Amino acid sequence: MEFLQFATDVGFPIAAATGGMYFVYLTQKFLLDSVLEKIKSLIGIIKQLDKRVTAMSQDITRIDDLASTALNIPQEKPRPPPAERKD
Image (cartoon, rainbow, N blue to C red; front, side):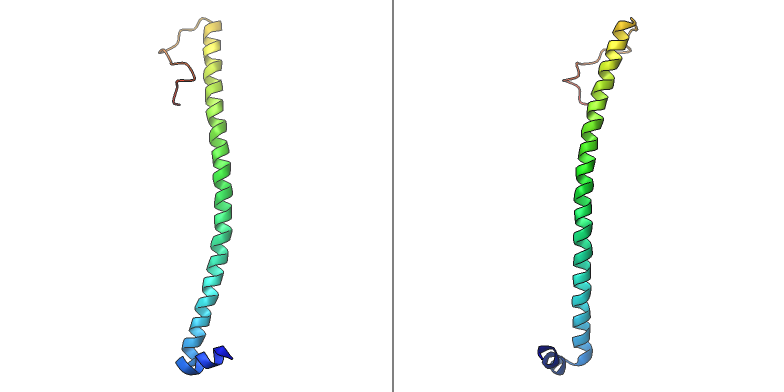
């Protein structure tokens, strides 16, 4: 009954447009909430991948140092120890 009173007060086109805007608002809120959840999961995945890449970079550097030492290959330039690097 409240909708009918509102419609008679402001006119049916305005009341229908208000109802339509509310429907669009609810739809947009639903879509943005689902997108936000997916973005948060992707951020978590990216952080894990970044940690893995950092660990692999340190491992490759360590393997390079060991292979260079074992095969007596001179290194191009001296490198700081892995703990001090900011790769």
